[in-house]
Image 1: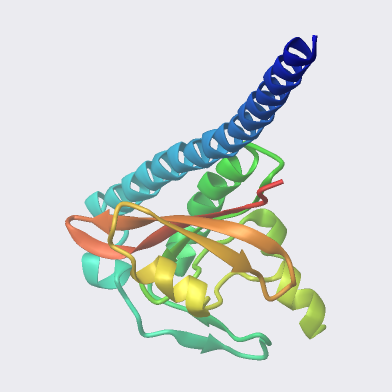
Image 2: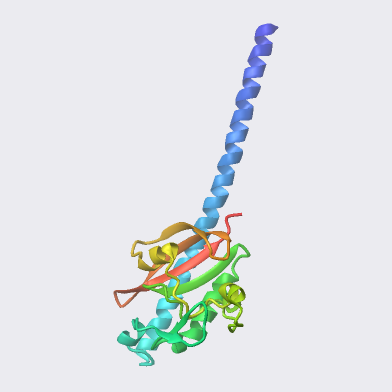
Length: 201
């Protein structure tokens, strides 16, 4: 009887360990599944962004030198500072529409953006494109368009030429996010990156 009891206890313990392991494994798979979904959205968004660039170039609305303009002209009376370029006005509306479409894919997504190789944001999601109020704290959160996002995470994403880059990200607003980015190439030239920020939980 003692042997049978001990054997039952051992089998029960093994079963509990297996159940616990499988539960953790499924949790990890769920997280990985969402990361892969974000990757697919980023790739699709990238395709739309590069198609937009190609359309503007083919129709002579923009030239390659204009699209790759890095002479950032300060916009007066903006804090944090904003800038204009030779191409931001042409990209603003269509690029915002593309990024808003992907932002609405899931409530975990916090931002979707396309930035140039120096972190310049010519167009932002609608919720981050509020006209400046003069209140720096409010503008920091709600008026991010046309800023240069060149913090460490931003620089890494903008400069990266590998297929993708995943970074843990603490926004200047205090939010803890994951930043998933893939590089944007136009006619074999590196323009910048598509970045998607999302909450893990």
